[in-house]
Length: 130
Image 1 (cartoon, helix red, strand yellow):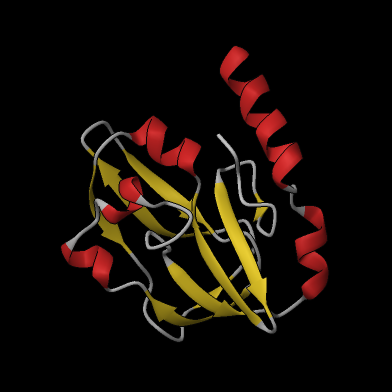
Image 2 (image 1 turned 45 degrees about the vertical axis):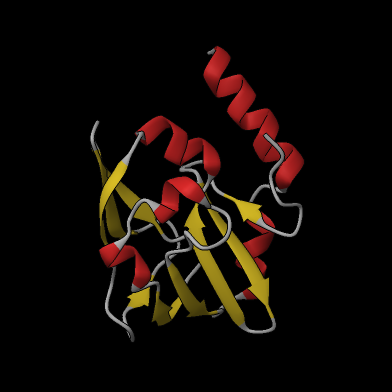
């Protein structure tokens, strides 16, 4: 799996894409693959304040319910309401139309602590072997 190089990644398998002062957040292809068919998504309200590393929602699949963790801190400015009626978009296009939230960026330095695409691919490979 090729992971988008313009994204940053967490050990909890979230991705974040920064454009200006806006961050778009989703779960990775690996995460959706491990979950299986996504049947429900719980997202925060617009205006919610997210803390890096803290849970902000959940993804429910036929296998399990998994918390979603904020990769960086910020205020939620948009949620992907399409997922409420079509949560399978996370499975179909996790790095595109399956995005979860958009948020303001509080501290650009937080992004430096996240993995780039190559490091994330290595992390996933090591995790699946281990």
